[in-house]
Amino acid sequence: MSRKLALALALLLAAPALSRGAEEPVDLSMMTRIRDEGFRRSQVMDTLYHLTDVIGPRLTGSPQLKEANEWTRRQFESWGLANAHLEGYPFGRGWSFSACEVRMVSPRQVPIFAVPKAWTPGTKGPVKGEALRVTFDSEKDLEEYRGKLAGKILFVDEAREFKAPEDPEPERFSPDQLEKLGEFEIPGEGRDFRQMAIKRWRLRKAVNDFLVKEKAVAVVEASARLNGIVRVTGGGSWEPKENVGVPALVIGAESYNQILRLLDDDKRVELEIDVKARFHDDDLQAYDTVAEIPGSDKADELVMAGAHLDSWHAGTGATDNGAGSAVVMEAARILKALGVKPRRTIRFALWSGEEQGYLGSIAYAKNHFATRPESTDPAQKELPERYREETWPLTLKPEHAKIAAYFNLDNGTGKVRGIWAEESTAVKPIFEAWLAPFADLGATTVSLNPTGGTDHVVFDDLGLPGFQFIQDELDYTSQTHHTNLDTYDHLKREDLMQASVLMAAFIYDAAMRPEPLPRKPLPQERPKKPAKPEKPEKKAAASPSRPPG
Image 1 (tube, rainbow, N blue to C red):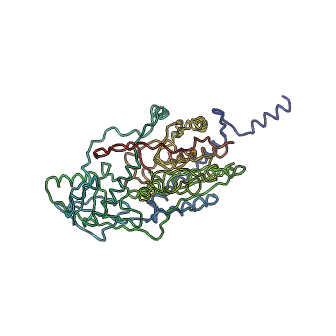
Image 2 (cartoon, one colour):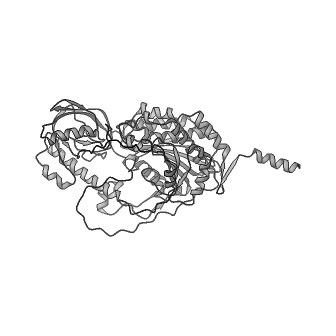
Image 3 (tube, helix red, strand yellow):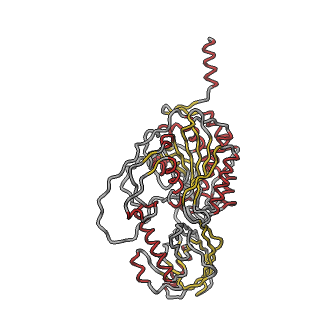
C-alpha cells in the first residue's frame, strides 16, 4: 500500500461516520453520542417533576406560569445556554383558584367534584341556589329567562349520553396507521373555525352580562369526558374591562346527569357552592422563555425549537404541554452536555398563551419575523385581535430570512414516530435521512400532510419552515387533554427520553447542514368567497380536529 493511499484511508477512518440518504449526510457519530447522553443521563423526568408537582398548573398570566418562566430561564442558564431571558407581550389579567367545594343539599346531601372555569369569579363564601335547566344556544334565547334566574344555579348543557367503554383507542400507531399517515390527503374547504370562535365569544359576552343583571348564582356545565373525568378550559375574560360573568364550574358527566334526572322528575334540587378564585392585575403581560446555543460560521442564522409552557388548571399540565417543554429543555441540555459547536445559532423558546390561540408565539413572530397592517374595518376592530381577519401585505423583518428551521412538540407524552412535513416535498427526503438512524426507536414516518393545533402553525403561516413531530396518542385525547388527569403519573419516561433524543438530533442536523431547510412559497392573500345565504341555526357537530392546545 502506498503512503498516499494509507494516508487517505487513515483520514477516511478518522472522519465522522456519515449516512447518506437522498444525498443528505448525517453525522452518525454525533447521533450515537446524542443517544448515549439522552438515554443514560436523562434529566427529562426531573424537569417534569418540577414543572408539574412543584409549580403545578400554568395558566397564562397566572403566578404559577410566571414562576415557571423564571425557573426555566434559570435552568437554561445552569446548563450553560446563552442569552436566557423572558420576552413579554400584552396579555391581560391573571387568574387562579385555591378551593372549589360543591354539594347537593336537597333532596339529599351529595358531595360533587367540580372545577371552576378559568377567568370566572369566586363566590365570596358559600352560596346556595336552586338548580334550573336552561338553554343558551343563541342570544335570542336569553329573553325567555328574563326575571326568572335570580338565586338560581343554571345547568346549561343537555345530559351527556353514556356509552359503555368499547375497545380503547390504540395507544401506539400500528404499521398500517403509519403508512396511512404517509398518504397525502388533498385538503378540502374545512370549517371556518374563526367564525365559530367569534360566534362563541359574542354569545359568552351576552350571557355574562345577562346573568349578572339577572342575579344568577352560578353556571354549571357537564364535562365532555365520562368516567368522572372533568375537562375544563376558560370562561369569563382575561381582558381587564370585560364582564367576567358569574361563577362558572364544570362537574363530572355522571353527577350532571344525575341532577338532570331529578329535575326531569320535578324534584327541587338545591346546591351549595364555595369557590375561592382571584384575578391578578399586578402585571398584565405574559412571557415566553428564550435561550440560545450560539453558532459559529453561520451564527446569524437560526434553528429554533419550541413547545408551549402554559396549561389549563384542572390538572398539572403534564402531557399538555409540560411534556413538550421538558423535551425541548432536555434537547438543549443534551447538546450543551456534548459541547456541540453548531454552525447556526440554536434558539429554544417556551411559549405562553398557546391555549388561548398561540398568543405567545404570535407576539414573538410579530417582534422578530413579520407584521401585518392594522385593520381599518370598524367591524374587525371591535373583535379581539386573535379573531380578526388577516390583513395584507405581509411585511417581512430581517430575521425572517435567517430562520433555517423550527421544530415543535405538543401532542402529549407519546414517543415520536416521525414528523409532519407540512406539504413541503423538498424537505421530505431530508427528514427521511435524518430519521434513518432512529428507525430502531420506531421513528420512521414523514407525512406530507399538514397538521394544526399548536405553535408551529404560526411559523408555517409566515412561510417559515416550521414542523411538528408525529407522536403516539396514548391516552392524550381520551383522558388527559385539558382534564384533571393531566398529571405526572400519566407521563411515559422512555417515550419522553426517545422524543428528547429525536428533538436534539433534528436540531443538530438543521444547525449543521450547509443550507437552511427548503421553504415553501410565501403565503398569499386568499380570494374572498361570496357570502352564503343565512341558514337556520342548528347545533354544530363536534370538530374532528383539535383547537390550540
